[in-house]
Length: 194
Image (cartoon, rainbow, N blue to C red; front, side, top):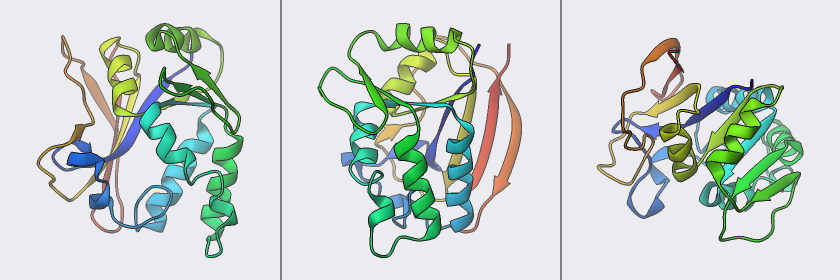
């Protein structure tokens, strides 16, 4: 059975985007929207350790608008070049009924996301990562997420898109790792208790 990991950059008050889908709070314009090269490298290693990335529509549209060609930008750093190539080659699944085409080693699922994620988890293979608040929220409510990787930025936005969705019951977690990055960002990684 595969492990499913939900990880994103989050504000101190728990939002992945401020009102109006504003990501300006995250600073910088690197692949992880962070000014820290160390944090950028950490996100790269997380993606490299995953065998499959699952995206909701909005995150897919954000990532696919600049990730595939990040290595072709005139001022791209070596890290940005490597990230773009890894992202482009990484097997991906996009869950959406609003789009009809995906590229870059990606397949589109327009049906029941929870059923498909359940099927993918049951396969033999390495870890999968999931991104996008709506998609991850559905997986959370279904009890499919095994691990949470939260990079908390020291900023309060007061509203927007929350990292965690409303749940019908508690999910007990074990803290397995913490790490502080330049700029005051703190990564915490939790595994779901069985």
